[in-house]
Length: 354
Ligand code: ADP
Picture (cartoon, rainbow, N blue to C red):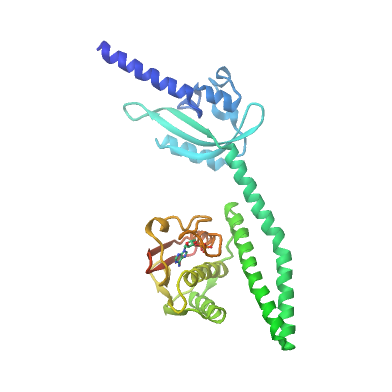
């Protein structure tokens, strides 16, 4: 008995030392949210001493920057006996803000009743600030580049018109090259701009009823005119109209078709298949190109990720933007692929009005 007590005491001492010495803030409250314990990291991170914190609630570090919904969700989750994890902005005693990766876990007695809550904050201020600055830079740079590049494109089009009228073939060829390279820059800037919109939660859809088949046919026609390297075949149909943003869905399809062409050899087929399921339209874009390995399939929808050791032009943004557009419509995007044999990208767009 004494031996068990001794080993329990030793274990308790070890846990206590671990919590006291960890770099993350740890605090324990009773079930009404009144603080009963804080570790030294809490004192350092918040600027409040143990004496000041005990008997108070975590409201002392409230920054006022969390929404009412945040607190509602927090309380309903932890009172339900579940963990709550999110990123919060807190205010130190000296008024400075800090970002924390925040977890609250309910502690239950042996009957399953919640008696306390333990909160852990990992300080992520530095990473968050860096991310914010990066996002701001991308947003500003793409915004500032938009006007000059549009002007360049405008003059290219003017010159193209003039030179084709004067039958100056050589100079027309030069301008056409400038024009097509400018298109690439315009697309890149648009992708960067879209990414910063997505990150800021500001990707807004302009929804309307539209015919998917007409949209897809138009896109394929454009591809046939501009890239003659692949045989694009449309199969199947969707017999009803969709509610969504045709421009954004078009952008998603163009991204998938561009990839299908980019990552498969000239002369091969690209199949576009439309199917009408009960609740959604299913679009499949299949190529017979280089394919994607299983481990890479999981990552290709991530921002800036390029499989097959990159190599081809692009920034690894197309699939990220595509999947965000699809998600925003309540649909899904995924890939099935075998290395060396080709890839099939699928997207679904639900029919129901949302
Ligand atoms: P990007 O094409 O600009 O690199 P994407 O986000 O469109 O960016 O695609 C991410 C990565 O997924 C690509 O770098 C490529 O390695 C891979 N990928 C996308 N589509 C295909 C495809 N149809 N076949 C093979 N690999 C593909």
